[in-house]
Image (tube, rainbow over all chains, first blue to last red; front, side):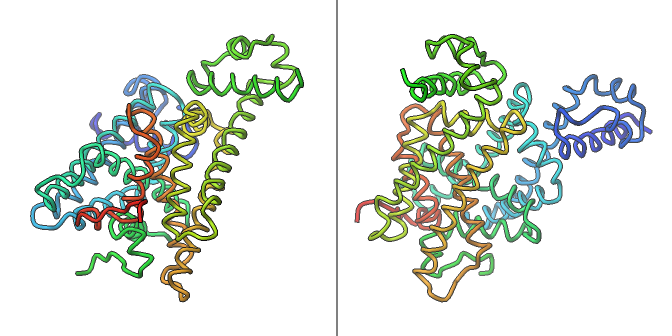
Length: 208
Length: 208
């Protein structure tokens, strides 16, 4: 078996173990057993528990960012801003629902054991926030060639959107029967139609 | 000096030290010195570093929840839902700006060192989310005697709002010159007017 394939198997086992048990409680023995390899081989390929955990955070962070980018790029060229956001959010919640252990590594475990892990996950979050900032900024400029709101407003809105999405992903993964589409629709209602419109009975809808 | 006063001084020193240095790096020596008392006295009053940290999380969590409740209650009886939300958010961001060390204890430190601390801060978060859920639910029922959206929708919106507020509080505290009012206005624009309205140049405004 090629090294790259075996390494991916070890990391799959590591993400599952770290995501479910946490960084401290997870043992290299368990990870090796779940991956179907010997413990010395895990150390040979991935050096230490700390490096293995860091590699997991990087892989899961990159996969999440890629999923959101791909989701938005599917509609990018021709669709209005709300459709782009809907595509990005649907991709985000689909990814976090399909990879609950990866999301747990990023959102809980990586933040709960200090550096260097918190810094790794902060980079992923900054990348997602920058992407959302660009999206909102572009939509704003499209709607108003003379800017209606400044860079700091846009950054604040992106921070709010990313925080809302993180919170909803945790809630969706813990609440039986909440689908990725439902979580994305909740956030579109909140973020796009706005609570004000929602209270007046005007829902945002993906159907046009 | 009465015990209760001295205990509050120790906890003030502890919140400042834990908030800035983190749970592990903070030492009982530093906390005692900052409080102007001997280390044995800190242990006599608050037992252990773990119990002291737990007491800090409880105190800061209760203070934050009380600040938000008081903010909303100031307008509760006579004002419409968006004014209530504005009052609650302004109180939230004013409190997190005035108590950056307390916010750091709740939002970062308490989550980054496993149990029992994560459970303590989860209870504060659940209390805030339940409060916001009630607020949104009541506003929805007021606007529509026949419910337009169900309990789960309301819970999802509350989760989104709390997540957005947490994210913005961190951003506001890290970004020079962002005031509590500005952070609250950003979230009102996002949550009430909605991005859709914002893109169309319709801002929510506290002035009527």
